[in-house]
Image (tube, rainbow, N blue to C red):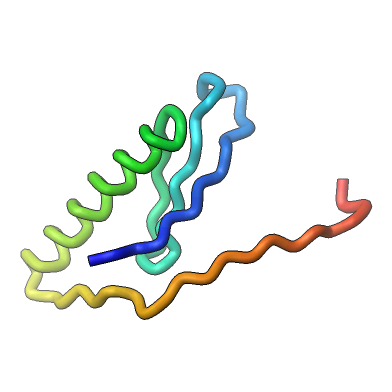
Length: 78
């Protein structure tokens, strides 16, 4: 199964520098890890756990059809 992941650098003093969020929009999941590789590994672990939980409850898991990503700029928002 393939799931899109959106990575976003964390700008929060409660975590060390270079941590990233990994968002899995199709499943509504978010996790984090050190660097892109750490965040990707954490997302893979979380997705596997999510799928296992769904399947253990007799629920089906469908692969999303497509993932799209866009960026918009909001001027003077700060």
